[in-house]
Amino acid sequence: MKYLDFYWKILYFNQEKLFDHFRQVIDNLKFIVNGGKIIDASFAEVPRQRNTKEENEQIKAGNG
Image 1: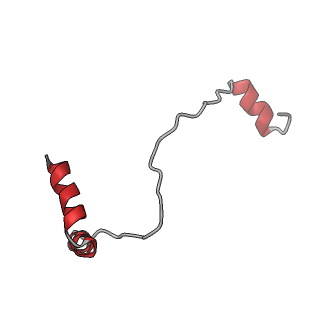
Image 2: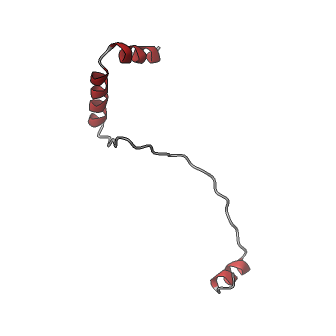
Image 3: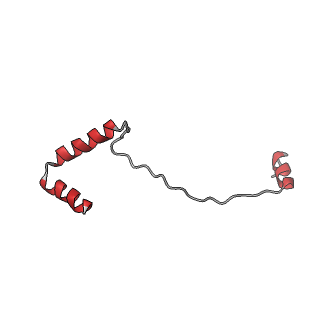
């Protein structure tokens, strides 16, 4: 029911007061907020290349 309580506050209370309170809570927690930025914190697996010892020696020698 917390969602409905939050929804009710947005509908019936002054939105500016609600967001001012939110900003104050964030400031008290010492978080740094940058407006207008989206940050993607996802991880993606990448293919790993495995060279043999001989292939590495060839690459280092410039014959790769």
